Length: 232
Ligand SMILES: Cc1ncc(C[n+]2csc(CCOP(=O)(O)OP(=O)(O)O)c2C)c(N)n1
Ligand code: SF4
Ligand SMILES: [Mg+2]
Image 1 (cartoon, rainbow, N blue to C red):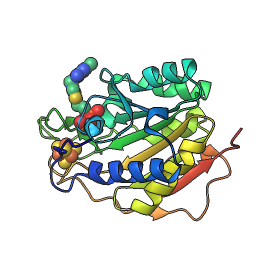
Image 2: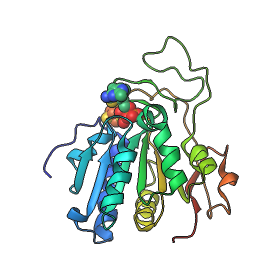
Image 3: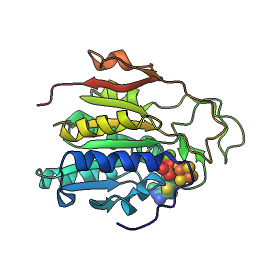
């Protein structure tokens, strides 16, 4: 594809799309055998730069479209992409139910902590105490956490990756694409425009994955491959 991306300078989605491309190349997957179902949003615009099959879905609906695609074409490698808004607001039910069924797809969450494309409104991932662009005051509610929800729903593969760690991102995407159940990768990539004044997150790398998912709940600074169940 020869489209020039329109993301802002420094946007984490540049890094994610590069890691994604490298992972697909490393695995020798042919573009015709890989389908990404995109959400609507800044990061959903990866549809313009990733040279694999793409399906731009409705906001919050990339997971059900991806699950349907995998059900009818099980030989394909199927990925759902979602922003924090699409995942935790409009489409939250799909996230929990796909984990419950262990649908064999990979979910990549581009968590920029706001509704980015529509100019920085507060999403369910916006940190408590942060003031989003369109809000009158600070956020007074506890954010929903992707890893907490994945862990408590019983996801078999869970990773959290800071946008600054290209190697981890690349390695985890490769592993997830080979995983036979529902794999969740959350990329933390605070929006460079609308979340630039939010508190900085200091990550702590995990040495090895947890023995069970519940150990992860409430540990919001952990980064790495956090849980990996049996690949059956
Ligand atoms: C059902 C529905 N609600 C709202 C919108 C408007 N809308 C389009 S993109 C967007 C923000 C997306 O935020 P997020 O999912 O976090 O992705 P980001 O742009 O931050 O990458 C919104 C609210 C829509 N298209 N459809
Ligand atoms: S608004 Fe934020 S998320 Fe959207 S392209 Fe710019 S930096 Fe990236
Ligand atoms: Mg967002």
